[in-house]
Amino acid sequence: MRRFCYRCLRYVFKYWIVHLWLKVMFFRQVQQHGDNFSYIIADDATREAAVVDSSFNAGEIIRVLKTENLKLKYVINTHDHSDHMAGNEELLSMFNAKTVAHKLSRINADVEVEDGDFIHLGNVSIKVIHTPGHAPDSICLLIDNKKLLTGDTLFVGECGRTDLPGGDSRSMYDSLFSKLLKLDDAVEVYPGHDYGAKPYSTIGEERRTNYVLQPRSLMEFIAFMRQP
Ligand SMILES: [Fe+2]
Image (cartoon, rainbow, N blue to C red; front, side, top):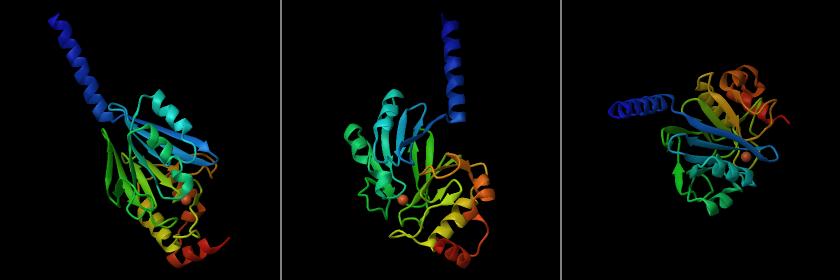
């Protein structure tokens, strides 16, 4: 019996070490309203979860959260445009979660974040990168230095428009070239809309193929963004 317990303990210890080392993460891209993407991120061990950009109909998100037995901790919005946050209320009515948004957001968020902040879900860490340009409060979320949720800042093969209220091409240039393109080529890119040839990409692929990201001076980029 003592021998059996020792083996069990050894197995549990090994599993725990491997789990910590691999930092197993639950990640799901959900398309539930037109071309809007929502995301569910969770720590596999603690089941703590966050939903990013709830969009208009949270039905599929709620189904996944319940099926996977996830504990919704945060509802995060990459910016305050209605197509990204309209499902917040539905989620908050069903789960005891906190809203998270950039401090410039018009959302009255429970947790206001700024560039460089971290959000934690168990062992999963989410770094906030402030990327104004499409909207003043736009943020991208870098998960465990591997996956980047880009909201309406960067799409597969495109970038977000800068001609809406609060949009600014000068800020977009800085966000794209001084922040996102500084990331490693292997980082996976998950956008806020399904506008590209495929639903996700990598920084390296976007650097090579996205026509918006081809080398331009600031003035050339501003003129480029004015083109229809
Ligand atoms: Fe937007």
